[in-house]
Image (cartoon, rainbow, N blue to C red; front, side, top):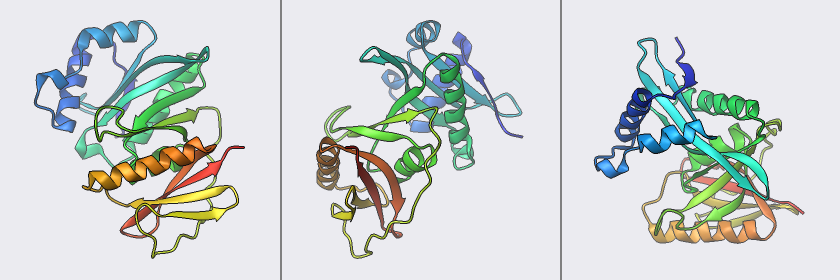
Length: 236
């Protein structure tokens, strides 16, 4: 039986969500818990918190975010989506995103944003290729030194673009750029999160430079067991 997704809007529900949040991420410090008062106020005035419960009514996933505004246009910013380990890889993360999309559209907005670590190629593939998000913003050290982020912008009304094959040589190395065609460049990254902070900073710096040169991140795909690549396409 698939988990049932519904809004969380009570203090007890937020307490459950905070417990799941700390459990999934392995947080021990109480300072890393969710602020229940803040979340309940946020939910009351423009925020959104959704939870997924299994057949035993146990909370196994939740997401939360709030309304942001840029250039006078509102959008939903999704701060976090958390899925219990036993449910990871079973489509629940995707179901949570689609549930967020439906709720955001019902609130009259057509865009949703969130951030992720660009060195996590699996997350990049999900955000860009599965959901069809795009990125025009790379933020080195967004949450502190070495804690880099890419900001995804998901047009909730746009169809998911079809993926096309891209030939990238197996001899490519992390940090290499490969010209795919006149408008597209590939940036090679490790398939798994590297432990070398200097390599991560170098790759994130390259991403930021290419995006700044009128490109957007459109795909993240596996080359082989060791390598993945971002595709960045010229926007004008």
